[in-house]
Image 1 (spheres, protein in one colour):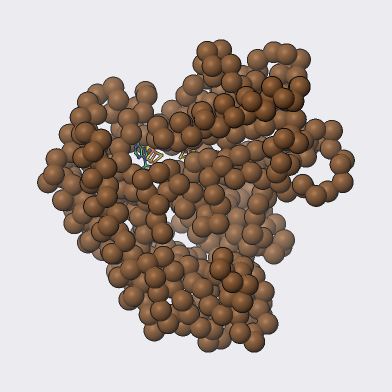
Image 2 (cartoon, rainbow, N blue to C red; image 1 turned 180 degrees about the vertical axis):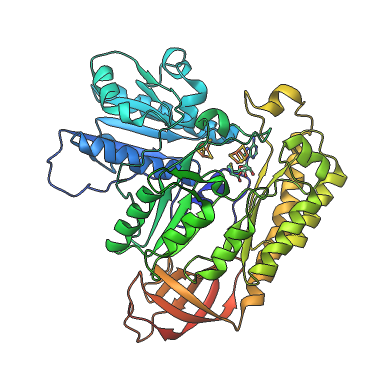
Length: 482
Ligand code: SAH
Ligand code: SF4
Ligand code: F3S
């Protein structure tokens, strides 16, 4: 099910099995060898979840161990998201709950990390007195020093954004992982100025991580048994790394190829592609390597050229449709998903109809759908009036969701009878007699384990036999033990 009206929609995009606000405990059951314990809860996009793994690594090196039990923690961190007002409200509520805990446990410190830290800065410390540390996404290396400051009774803040921080040399501690799929951050920040979006303000300028460090991380993951990496960036197609030693510029297409070559058994995914930047080179690279998944997340935001212009997306309706055609021409069986915002400033019924028709045209397999939420400091907040009434925004969102439900079901029905190579991610949620895994084009499959002696992280050829709107059911046809 696509949950759309709340911000749980983001959790779906992060990982099917990862919930918003889920706590992590990679070493929860190890002996008590750590001087302090930290608890970390993450909200927002996959980048934030990947960042929490970097934070865990930095804290771990300082001798702090993670715990899943919040009452047990000396340090509580909340890695926050500001993308919509709803996300911030959820986090504020959580902070008041932590304040209660602080009253009961002397010396417990609460830290706000991530995008809200950047937007609210010292406001969180001074006006609201909810927290002891405020640390922005580019300042995690200073966390140990800031913790010491906070322990000494000072209010600790570092929200400086950097032009070059990529945490490229830090090996993330894999948190709450299924041991099969992992996120690998390839760049940070965003140079686009979509008028609705806070990300350029919370994450700063775009910068790319060195290709060698990315390939090394993927190789290490593969050696540890992982079989799928998702390369992460706000706009992966503008990845650009100058390899001075070899005097070459590594583009995203080249990076994809390098990662695909780590092993044919390692699946490669990526997110997010901005329609204006995805190149034919990338599409041809996807076709060239069987292990690069045939799936592209291509957010459209609106189907109306007029609204797209106000959003500063820099493409028209026709241009986007042409991009979808191009993808299907080069990669005929490519899965495509989109992001939609309803009720952006000045949106009229006709603009909304244009959104519905572009969704039909694109035949999205999935979509992440939101109603517009005005954010402080964005271009839209400065230039335009948030003039579409909330009921209208929600009504249009409802129609968008209804349409997507139908499109997802139709897309799944088209797959019945076909065969798909599935990477097994683990037991299905409902039964340990069934496996759950995904196809290259990103769909969730559930199928009986039968007599095949398979393990998670292995592949099976599965024929789709039936479906719901969210899942394909199938039967193993061929199994590979490796
Ligand atoms: N860099 C990614 C998206 C990051 S934010 C990209 O360009 O696709 C994820 C999604 O949140 C966006 O695609 C957009 O659909 C939605 N979003 C961003 N700002 C929003 C706002 N102010 N109100 C509602 N939805 C928003
Ligand atoms: Fe936001 Fe646009 Fe950048 Fe995506 S590309 S993070 S929507 S500014
Ligand atoms: Fe939210 Fe920041 Fe990601 S605002 S969506 S956590 S980049």
